[in-house]
Image 1: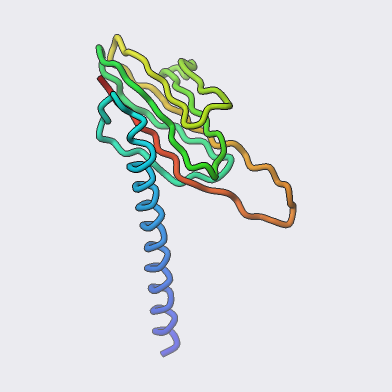
Image 2 (image 1 turned 45 degrees about the horizontal axis):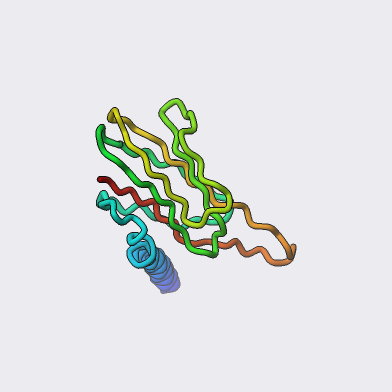
Length: 150
């Protein structure tokens, strides 16, 4: 009987953990639609919703294909709790084509592609300053990478 109770408890904990994960994704999706998508105008959103919950100090690389002859806008939109999020655009050899400024909020870059190519977009969240050594909480928040085209 005890073994059965333990298994039920473990299953319940797994269900609750998944519910929290789905809830945070839904909040990030809602944030993106309300706060970030309007920034793309007059560009047309490419239809891909690339967003995730990041912690302070994290970095992510995202590969995307850009087609010849189109004009693009890339926006890294983030919640204020993360501070000034930066992004870089790199080619396949990791040569930096663009780097956002440190003082920009929701940085963006407009550019035109002459040849179809894959580019790497590197998003980085600044590290959190530890003002109080006793507090071990790490800030996290939603970051959305939006791509629009003309």
